[in-house]
Length: 256
Image 1: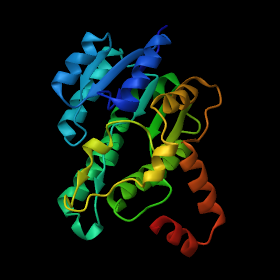
Image 2 (image 1 turned 45 degrees about the vertical axis):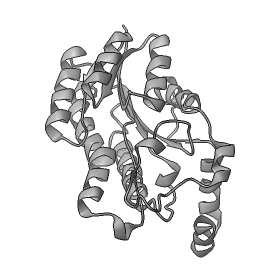
Image 3 (image 1 turned 180 degrees about the horizontal axis):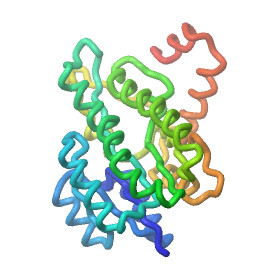
């Protein structure tokens, strides 16, 4: 029987690349996008388009109900991939901006997962994959809001993984470093006069979305998926340094 997976954030980047790769491997891909025109494009490309705005609880509820209907209450995979960044010093981030950052990157994923678990739990199998970030491991000046949402997603995923340990459903985190996507174009810069930009050296370690796709495939199809999948040398190095170095020294490195 063909297995189904819902992927959020499919209009471009990691979501689109994952959708294409998994469809080619025989998966039925339900491709969720925020804008109706992107949903139509997904349908035209042979996916099952789902309209989903993670900022709006009613949209999340409609999307989840549609997924359950389309899969006849049997969903194998959920890839919570959609997200964006609010960049700027925390003193320039309003409560509204912080709430929207968490609505997209955290609250929406929480609500969607809870609504779809009833289509997974009775079958005692499935995979839930979360797109975190190297910013889920460390925070840097100007990226505090985004990092906070990814830190929350990391903690939430750890708890969910342990709570589902006897269910047959496995939970994995993907932790990308710099990836060639439209993410930077969609960043909400709170200070247009002083935008937060990646250091020039980051370009030397930036990979394409396919680097993430390989990890998504393993998390979805391996009989022993990993708990975490660091992607890019940056994430591997940052993770190692955080484990090994004193916090004050780590601060100096991240502020450089």
